Length: 146
Image (tube, rainbow, N blue to C red; front, side, top):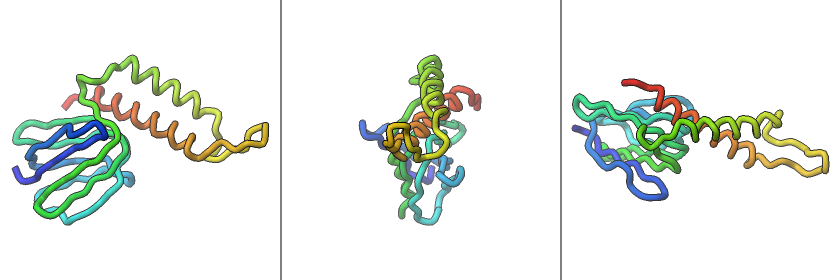
């Protein structure tokens, strides 16, 4: 094993292990990290983090966050959410996805003027998109079969 992987959430360390490779859901697309990767810092979007340990392929859903690939083949993932397949309740996730999607239906752009002259905030739009993306990442994990 050639990479030291750590996945950390606000609730603490969820993964600390040696792996051969890591695939991450970057904001501009999925990318892989192998031994000897150049140092980098990248933003992550909700999606599936994959890593290999010998013949074992491990997957988990992660939320938004950042990854730092540093010297010594260290991969540090800081994420606001994490779920293993066994942690996910499909019914709850589908309900959350439906609720957030319905709330987002009323929006035509990230900023909108309401009838009373108040503005809906960009943060509200982004929070709804995050909820949708996180729910979808969990469903994608449940749908994956390798």
